Length: 445
Image 1 (cartoon, one colour):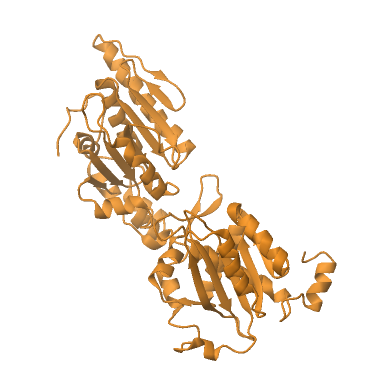
Image 2 (spheres, rainbow, N blue to C red):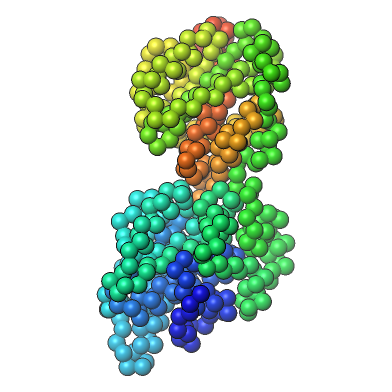
């Protein structure tokens, strides 16, 4: 670990902040409690580096536009204070401020951006990832930004990367960087550490004001994996089975004519296509997995042929297909071939995802679904995180990796949705008399 020059005394920093600034390791990660000055400290580092080294560029990616503006406001205040100090000692140092850009008179710049995979690309710069555990698609952002620091700057200095966040479970790149990359300079600051170093706060009052998981994660910096997962590992394990009916030959025990329900999440190049088939014996509220078919980089023509082979089974009561984007044409063709009563095209909107995710959660809580005992399925189901945005909207998010983008989760959710809506269909797949009356009256349709 190398150290920088001492921070000017006008900046009143606590010891843990001073230690962080003094660490000039190229890759540096901070696991800090809420409200301990993460953003201020990283803004201080960027401002001082820009002021002291001409032509320096720092890019900061925050979780959203509001967070980017708040981070830049802190950097602006620090830059203004630096300018005042410079004037007091006879130098003229006046930075220009725009909403998300600070330009220094020596040619240095700081640019603030809301984080996504597109904004992470296109820069050769030092990078700060602010509250990285809360970035949407952290894996895509990481993949997009790492090349930004590949080359040295114009003065032959290696570009640097600073990552800071409070924990947000284990299903994100921030956790992986902290747990598996010892080459990073590691800095952990809990609320107790900060208070011991002089920060004014009452930890006991905070502990009593928040739930135990919140206290451990937000203030003690522990990675509580289940805190953000919609389906916990315990819930998933309780619904796993070696076979649908517990036998070595489950097909032999499936009652004749038991209805089948199909969910299809569609991908093409980046994501998987997954077709999940459930069977629910008459008189049972439990849905048993019959087949999980995974298609990778499969042409749409072949996908339609595979789906058609499944839908030709007369016991398929209902099929729900992801019709968002690239799935629209396939869903429309399946409806043309097999009827709108057997095939439902489901647009993935905030409302529809909320409905399906809630149905999934209820099925696993009530143990009314049986799934194969398979690691790839377990991890895919565990990927989905329920996140509440600053505006109060609920979103269901998952990082994309080599195993997909929670495609198995959504295929199962669609199959369960098919099971819930398939009750209006008769055994042959046509509308039952009662449901036909509802459709005619405009209630169901």
